[in-house]
Image 1 (tube, helix red, strand yellow):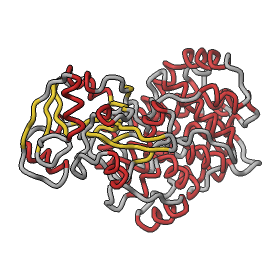
Image 2 (cartoon, rainbow, N blue to C red):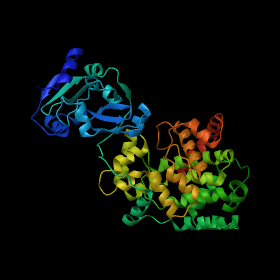
Image 3 (cartoon, rainbow, N blue to C red):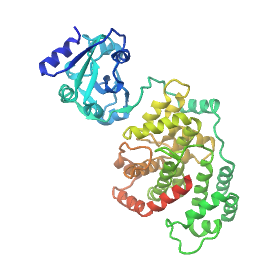
Length: 456
C-alpha cells in the first residue's frame, strides 16, 4: 500500500484529490525530500506536541522551525514535542518518522502555519517510507478543515535540541572563550565621575570636552527642539547647567562612549542606525515613566538607553551570525527575538551560550563593566515577560516602553505584549498610554535626527 491506511480512507471519504509520488525506499523524511528531486519549499511537515490536555499537530513548511512562543500565543498552552515512541502509538499504520501532516485523519486537533494555507501546491509524507503525496492548495485546505491558523514558525533551517545553561555558566564561558571588549576609557572615566556625589558640572564638561566628537553630540542634543531652550549654548558646561542637567549629560555621554567598544554594521533592523533610534526612544519614554512609578528619572533613562547592548556584543563577537540574525528578523517579524537567537546560536557550533538571548548577554556585560544594578537587571531580563523581582520597576519600565514603541515599528520585537499587566505592575492607569504617545509624537522628529547623528 502506497499510503498509510487511515490517511487513505480519510481522503477517500472526503473526496479529496491528490497525486501519489513513488520514491525509492528511504530512512527519513529528509532523505525522502532529497530523493524526490523537488524543491524543499514545496514540502510541508507535521510536528506533534503534547501537554496535560492532550496532543496537537502543528503543520508547517519543511524549511521552517516552530516558534514555541508563537505556538503558545495561538493555543494558550505550553506544549512539548512528542517522543518517537509516543508518536508511533498514535500513528501505528505509518512507517517510523513518516507522519502525514493531516491530523484530521487521526482525529487530532491541528494548528497550521499561515504559509501552508496560502500555498498553491504542497508535497508531504504519505505515512510510508516509499511514497509522497502531492496536493493542490484547495485540496489541502479541505483536508485541514477546522484547523486553527496562525503564524507559527521561524523561517530557516531547524536547530535541534539544546541543553539550557545558567547565567553563571554563560558569564563564565563568555569570559573564558571570547575576548570581551573592555569599557572604553572615556566611558569608564564618566562612570567613575557619576559615582562621585561631589562631582561638578564643570568636571563633567571638562571630561567630555577632551573628545571633540562627543562634545559635538552633546551640544547638538542640548540645542535640539527636545528642550526648546531659547538662548545660546556655547559650551558643554552651559549644556549641563542650563539645559540638560548633570545626570542626563552623563548618561548620554556614557552611552555614546560605550558604543565605541563595538564594531556593528549600520544597516538592517538590528544595525547601528536602528539601535540608536530604539535606544533613544526607549530612554525618553523611561525617563518620563519613572517619576510616575516612584523610580529615579536619570536611572530610568540610563536603563532605557543601555538595555539592548547585548545585541551590539553579539554583532561584535559574531559578525556572520549577526548578519544571519538580522536576515531572520526581517523574514520573521512576528517571531520572538529569543526564538530567533536560539535558531542562530543553538546549533552545536560552540556558540550555544549565546542562545540565552541578547538580554542576558547584555546584562552580563553590564555587570562586568560595573554599571548600576538596575541597568544590569533591565538589560538582563527585558526579554522575560512576567518578571517579578529585584529592580522590578526599572525592568517593567523598559518593557512598557518597548511595547509602546512596537506600534511605531521601533525596536527588534514585534510580537504583542500584555500592556495592561505592565501598567498594573507599575501602578499606572490605562490613560497614561495616551499621554506617553502624545509626548512621543512631540519629540519624534528630534529623536530621529539625534539617532541619525549618533549612528553616522
